[in-house]
Every structure is written in structure tokens, then in C-alpha cells.
Image (tube, rainbow, N blue to C red; front, top):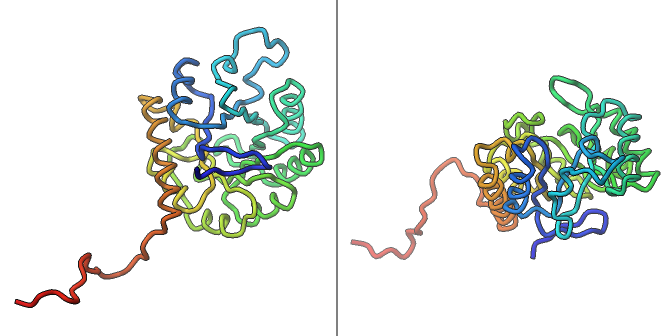
Length: 257
């Protein structure tokens, strides 16, 4: 089985999905099942951590097979993100965190300076940090040096569905990273997920592409297949691109008329 490992923990599926924007928790649960995902992200601020007796989306996640990855969605400062991560850990969610520090309300691009600050603090406190960042190879290298367990460059702005906008940057990040590379944000359809994997990404994280689809469960299955296909294509090795045609059947040895 083609597994991948983050911070010593091994996962079978290379597709990571979210929990927001679904029409209902029941639809979300069915989409999770169809996706085959082993990891599901949960915004700490969407969970009632003060009274876990109340119904929440956590009741619709099969924790016997799915690992919950808390995230700091909605945080705009390093201080706020660190506080939110601590809150998730104290509530018993996990000492893992998908770290988000947003720098701009319109584009939702990350504040990389604050992200580096928060990563350093949380790593020192024993968190397994997976930072959402821009597709900047230098920033990814700095996050890795700060102790990030993986780097999560965006493919395009969150929820945009534009697909990977800078293919070459993802290639460069993958080439130089010694930790897993997870393409996070911007996926719109199955071909986008397949491309991310063909570029060598270790995994793909998405939410809106599935939750916002007309049929989220079918799209979740499509993403499952796309991630697997893209990974197989990457391992198989594509043929080189050429300017001119090459005959599929060799002409050497052909019987002449």
C-alpha cells in the first residue's frame, strides 16, 4: 500500500478533507466516507469546546478510522492562532494543528511573517504543526527550518476553485522539501487534484470543492479516485514532452510492400 507519513504517523489515503459548508452534517458524513480520507480538518472555532455534551459536527465524524486535524481558521494574528491551537489541545481535540494565519480578508492569503512566528511558538510547545502558506519556496523552507511537520502551499486562493496557478513553484517546493508537501486550497475539480499529485505532492487538502459541489458525495468519490490516479501517474513516470510526433508503432522491421 502506498502510504505516507507525517511526524511518525502513517496514513493510507493521500486525500485530506474538511468539514465546512456542507448542506447538513449527514451529507458531510457520507462525503467523508466516499472520499476514503483518513484525515479530516475541523475548525476549532466551530466546535463547542466548553460543552461537549451538545451535538456538534464531531458527532458525525467516524473517529475510529478518521484522524481529526484541528485548524485555526479565522485567525488574523500569530497570537490569536496560537491561542486557538492551545484551546483545541486543551479541549482534547489533538496536539496536531493545521495552522492558518490569514493576512488579507479579501484574498485570504496567509500572513507568512505571522505564520512563521506562530509555527516557532507552537513547535516549542510540542505541537505537530502543518502550516497553510503561500506557494513560495523560500517561505516553505523557512517553515520547515522552524520545525513544521509538513508544508501546505496553496494551489490558488481558498475556495476559488481555480486549480493550481503556479505549477512550477509546487515542483520547486517538492524538490527541496524534506517534509511532506500537501497542496492546500484552490482545487476545483478532480483534474486539479490529479495534477497536484502528478507534480509530486504527498497529499491534497480540500473542502469547498467537495462541499460546494452539486453532488458532494459523488465529487468526494471523484477526488478519491483522482488523488490515487495522480499518485500512480507520478510513480509511473510520464513520457517526456516533445515538439514533434513519435510513431506509436516503430517502423523498424516493417514488411515493405
